[in-house]
Image 1 (cartoon, helix red, strand yellow):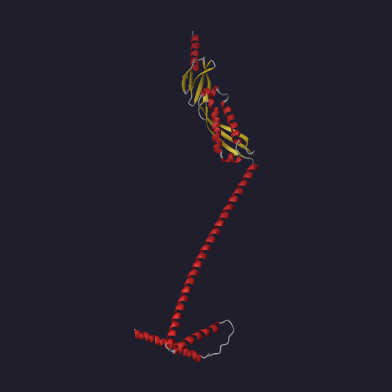
Image 2 (tube, rainbow, N blue to C red):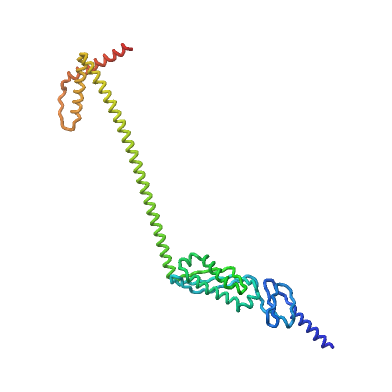
Length: 306
């Protein structure tokens, strides 16, 4: 009797152990009845039929990261580069992930590796190095669409490193240096050109100002000559009026003026000369006396008029 009780208790414990299942948070378990999928258990406490139902697959529903190993990729312009990356994915349907594909992680990894070669092999090296975001977007679209029947959502694909061969890196460095030297030369030439333009503009403004100065000076010289000629004309008119009235002093003034002008020109001439003085000094003195008499008469007339 005691043996029967012990067996019964042991059987009850075994049934409880087989029938009560606890699913942790972040996981989902598939349930199979005689090897056929029946339903999926979500996180929490569940009961199944012992010896009839069994746990099929324990699926991790959290986002998972896969490292894509480094591989060689031949670009469109026949450059060989080393590429590696990471894949972020999440299981959305536990049953499909368990029964639609065998070894889900390996399948996802191989699919990503193959498409990395396809996408990056269709691009030039320059595009490969400068358009990494576009590469990630294309890979994500292709891989996510391919894994959708497996109940998997690929959330991100990131290319970590793109490593060209050493000789190619050196060539790119030389090309970059040449490009920078070219830009520096262009900037220097543009600066020199701008400086020449500014210098020419300054010379132009200086020439304009100089021409305006010459114009103003010529105008003033002409005005001075006009006033001098006007004064000479007035003097000649006064002398002519005095001569017409019979004033001999006026004749002396006129002759003395011409005499003194001729003597001044002779003295200032560059040729060698010998002056014997006095040269009819009495005539010059008489002429100066005539000038004084004329001036006196003019002032007397002005005083009387006043």
